[in-house]
Length: 273
Image (cartoon, rainbow, N blue to C red; front, side):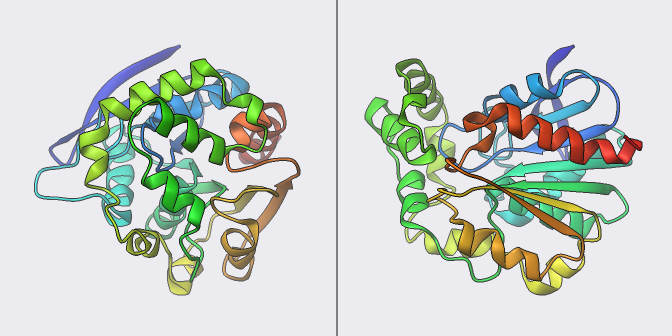
């Protein structure tokens, strides 16, 4: 069963997609304009089936979750909101899967809540110490709402341009327009500072005790393998990296079957599978 609901976290509403039953997996989306929890993870949710309790929020400033009054976006807010969401749902132990920005949030959450977070899947992740803002991510954060901006952004995200369909462009353009006001406050220029905000220190990464699976596309230009994933191998205590060839920044959409199997296998180890 799939359902949308609004959960109050620290006095502010968080819009959440939930599906399935079983061990909980918190799923955190990336930072592109027009991104939502359901849009980022719908394909993966179908691949994983109903044997997991999947919790996919719109993070603050995205989709239907506003930025709390008196706050602004950023790693600290997104991490605290994610932890508060799972507390509000009464979930004591959970795995976390995060894409791009969401990967940095997932790792930060695992460092902050070592007793709650059981496993981490960080996909095309940000967060590596010293990782620079790529020209591709800079362009994505700057993409204007509307069809041309949506098409340009999607073309940067994936390697296979056949995935940039007219329906995908139209859907993203609509989402970008709907979220334009909130998104404008998140990553204004100069944008390198916001990439720095999503960088985790060696000390923070050392506090991650949960097993971590890094999944990365070999042709990812947004968070390149060499600067985004490989440095994390030096800092995480229990980590493995799976690289997908012929893949850009969105493995969940570019290689959905392989990605779903990777997640099922890694998360299934909790159950003794």
